[in-house]
Image (tube, rainbow over all chains, first blue to last red; front, side, top):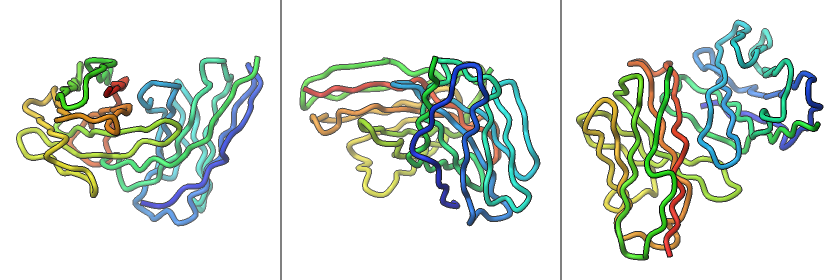
Amino acid sequence: DAKTTQPTSMDCAEGRAANLPCNHSTISGNEYVYWYRQIHSQGPQYIIHGLKNNETNEMASLIITEDRKSSTLILPHATLRDTAVYYCIAGAGSYQLTFGKGTKLSVIP
Amino acid sequence: GAVVSQHPSWVICKSGTSVKIECRSLDFQATTMFWYRQFPKQSLMLMATSNEGSKATYEQGVEKDKFLINHASLTLSTLTVTSAHPEDSSFYICSALRGMVRTDTQYFGPGTRLTVL
């Protein structure tokens, strides 16, 4: 699986969009980008995944650059309940996910 | 949809005893389930992959005789920590793969916090 790099932490004001970057410069053509989040003392929650096209669901949007070397997860209107550690994972499938340290997002009132 | 449950949510046991943790996919069938362990302030580490009806595949460094995994049905996998010791205290999380192909999505349970005294 390709290695991903994420900022250690980020702050976002409540109600504003949270943009979480992820670098995956060694991603190969058949590898997807997955995003999960983990709220304190809970299991990870699936957010979204994509291959090369931008994706949107009820939780978030995923913007993947044309060269696929980086992506951004966008939470359009962050709430306090979005405070969590966000993991960006690149892999050929969801079959085996390798979790890194992720980005700790703090939503500030 | 895609709900995974775990039971118990927390357990405290004495050193030397065995503890069983159940993982269930509530609204889908899961041929493949995974078990992770997470120590405080660390990320999730995959322990093993279990496929229904066959033996689990353990990650390097995980003792298969200590962490017994049974995936007897398409909705249930169990992890038994045998002869637990304080160093086994951790947050154990299961997940289930919804679908039959590797690109299908993995859904996680809420986790089980094990404390061994």
